[in-house]
Image 1 (spheres, rainbow, N blue to C red):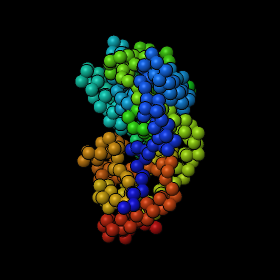
Image 2 (spheres, rainbow, N blue to C red):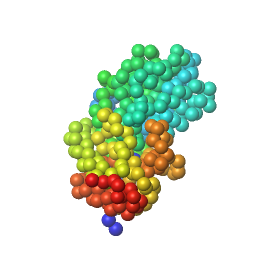
Image 3 (tube, helix red, strand yellow):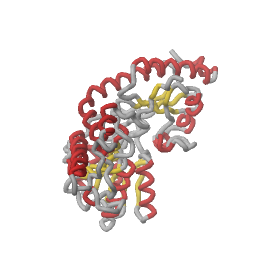
Image 4 (cartoon, rainbow, N blue to C red):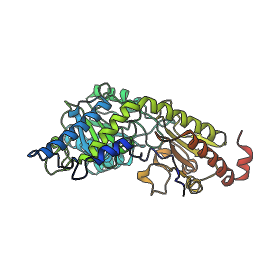
Length: 391
């Protein structure tokens, strides 16, 4: 059976061959397999050296100091460390946190947990294009605000927030600023030396690295440090205990180095393929782009198809690998909280698919996907809609 055309790169990316090869060299007895915390012998030193090389590679990608990188199991853990840890360390200064209605569940669930701990959380509504306006953040800031957490790129629509402007507001008011950048790092330029962010969450498997490893960028000089959420050994300068997974960190570092080499070229090619597919889809009529903001990720399309439910469309397209929204909430039967938060009617939210293009997508695959959409929409849509929409 032929593999489906993969158009779900926002969910996860395949590990790049160069990354897999580097990881494999850290797994078996003839490789660098030792515990990087075992400093009493040469094998442990070799593992530690590879870990620090991976830390440097990731730091170079975002223009950070390597000492600002804390390795975690992924962006979800990084979000927990940043949001819960920062709020807890700042609780004596205030108990107000600002986020948005369209954050990833890793952020929203942390904020809901904070509410149970006595914090007051403001959930900002996005503009119609899916972005969070800096002005909305400015209006929500209060004397007791201690933390703002807003994502860089939305995981469902690909819309970018102006985190430079939002961060500047926070810096001016002395408020900690965290951004979940799981979808943006490795896909577009992210420079923490110029962005006024205090904390940034990163996930390796979003940019052709392995699953199960991520990082939190924590700005040097940021104080007080977030309280650790995992205890037991004091690894990562006391911020995140647990034996470091050398092979995963090596993979993340190699993926970061590869991203730095190909960022501009990849973004241009992927954006061209995305627009090629969007042109085909528009020709079907009755389609709407969710998150039509000027600043968007190069590979993301979130499209509502009038007259057919997204789940029905997915079932009719087994030769395409797509999703109706975030893979982290794929078991939900409710419409996407992101699309509802943007004000989309339930009918259109239920009729939406997320289509994401990546490094290994080809023009032939885009054209095949376009053809399949044309065939399936003609079959599934009501006759009246088919007759009144189109060229």
